[in-house]
Image 1 (cartoon, one colour):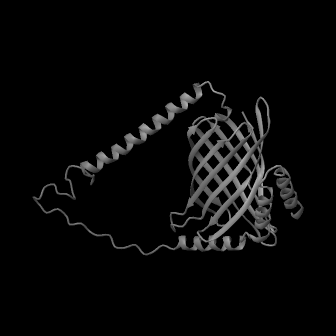
Image 2 (tube, helix red, strand yellow):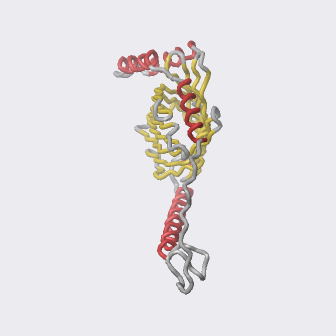
Image 3 (cartoon, helix red, strand yellow):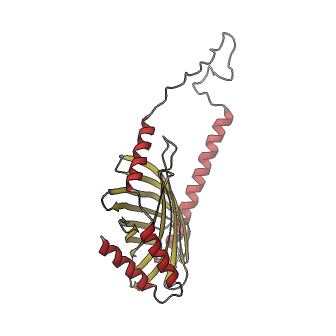
Length: 291
């Protein structure tokens, strides 16, 4: 493991040897490498506590009993003798208003998708598959595995990621993260902005949490680009955020062919588990885009 970490560190620094910020980045990388710590045991402890809190169900409060309508009272605000519904006209209208808005939004997204399919533009990312062979480290005794796959289908996309934090002598903590539906709000060759929703599965407790994301891709010049991503998972039972995450990466295109683009990527990843445990990681790897 130590050999792997040193190779990653040496390769990254060697890659940056032509930049004026080489010494600053070197100090930054080594600082995280020797000072930070991953706290796998603490994450598992918090996960178990959250699971116990979610299993606790308070005694239900007594349901108030509404007065029965007296004879001859006719229809009143609680009861309607001619229907089983307790919704008034305003509530029904509000529900239909939400339905109309949702239908209009879906229609707009569908129209935009058709437009992207018909547009003649050199933007092969619109319909492509991306494979991320990524990893990193949090300190000299822990590594982070981040393999990932994303399928782009015009305005829609789906993204699957496996996260595994491995610490020497303490085991590992892993999650399966699936952004089942991503919507590309802006789909330009130089700028992408997407929002998504899905779930995070935690094998240690066997729990599923809803997870949302916001991410962007920017092309600075012909070969250089960047990526920024935010993720937030939520436990509805305990109202806890099992993980909040923010990451930034710089991308450099190594090779371009007719149907394949190969890039090198490196950056930093911040994760906060159960609103208490902070993990900072340096990440890097190779990205293959098949189009």
